[in-house]
Amino acid sequence: MTVKAFIFDLDGVLTDTAEFHFIAWQATAHHLGLEFTREDNEALKGVDRVGSLQLILDKGKLTVSEEQFEQLLADKNKHYLELINDINPGNLFPGVLDCFAVLKAKGIKIGLASASKNAAFVVDKLGIADLFDFIGDAASVANSKPAPDIFLSVAQGLGLAPEDCLGVEDAVAGVSAIKAAAMYAVGIGEKSVLTQADIVFPTTGEMDVQQLLS
Ligand code: G6P
Ligand code: MG
Image (tube, rainbow, N blue to C red; front, side, top):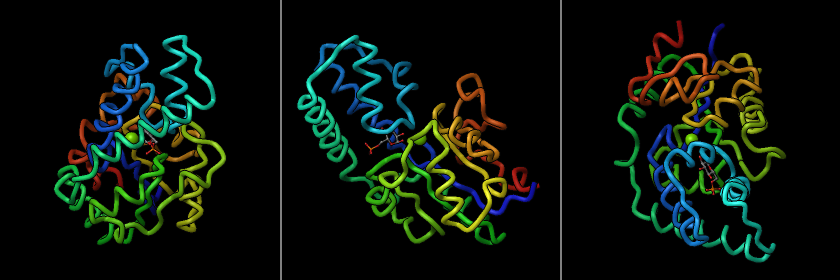
């Protein structure tokens, strides 16, 4: 395989916004009188906003009106936006800029495949928007992760076949999406959690780009 592009997830791969999503969803759950642990949160990682709330409600065997559902989504996003208000380039995970520099030097394209509707705002705050050759739009794909849609749309945006692309994800749903897109899947996190990944590194900074390209 000759890799022509690295397609990155955002939250939990390039920056620690996954933690802010967790804090905001935990507040939502507590508001509903439900417990919400880090372990519960693993199932939400990479899952879009509506799907995430549905998972919380399902786990608590709760149903709410359509209106309440919309309100809970709006409140969660408001809380999340407050939490990320002060993020800046210093919030990038260590090694991300070095990794991008190596990829650029080798002529490898860089894509972003985030399920977050806040992705454009976040990459702007992180000061990395200009480094991407293509940024996927979560709002414009039909099916969210674990469906392959966002990864396929980014490959298309880069003008490449999926087989030429490698995906990087911290979420179970995200790794499934990469594999469903027929791409090589790099997991960031724990091997015991990201069982579908082709290779797993504990952190993005520890990702061995040379090894992945050889
Ligand atoms: C990412 C995160 C999820 C989050 C989703 C939607 O995939 O991993 O935790 O729920 O984006 O984010 P949004 O900012 O649109 O609510
Ligand atoms: Mg993620």
